[in-house]
Image 1: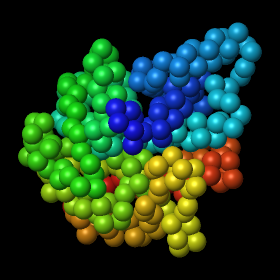
Image 2: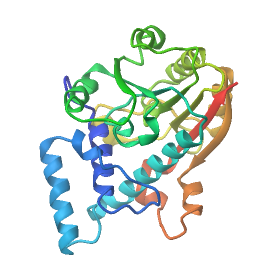
Image 3: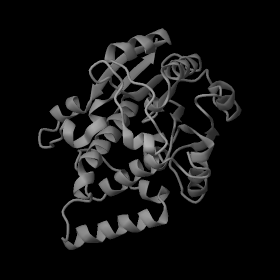
Image 4: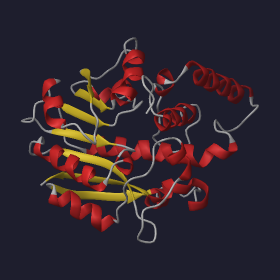
Length: 283
């Protein structure tokens, strides 16, 4: 992490969403707010792409090398938005490792929901500065700074006004693979302890490759190395031991079955081929 800056992966993910919003490929994808959280030079890039699409100079918002990842991130956004929409109405949405997430600024369905954005202080500083001038449809947005490897979640959330007696939805996107397995378990347990009956969770995790944790030299060089991966059975057993019942566990191969016109392969999207979304409810 860089002091006062969001993680590089958070910026890259937001850029992909901002570009994807110019010409969505996945049905249901929309993220008009993502561009507002980007650095100025990346905002200019999005605007140049918009102009190129309008003039017919290009047909895709993404460079060739970026298209598979951009499409994948559209999928991930739609699936997680769908999990939230399928949940019974909740008064509290907690986004763990929020990064440059824009749901509080783009989902009208959150008008009666307080959104708690939880993230590392170094990433959150940039987000808070940007968010200060951007209106949002959510009932309220509250920022909670945390180090997931060291800090306890409960006291920090309570201090921000979180009420554990009310059902909540927990969103944990693109984070668990950067935590050690024991930290993943500790956080799932802490979340369960704060969850009233009817609460749900949706999180991404990395599946093992041939029984082992995948490696990524690029992420290691960026200072964000992979630290955990699970088989589907392992993550379900872990979540169950921490108080969660599985509702759904899906990945890009499942999502592509619903959109036969889109083509993605393991070779093209790389590591994200092994990423899954796990949805559960407090047991």
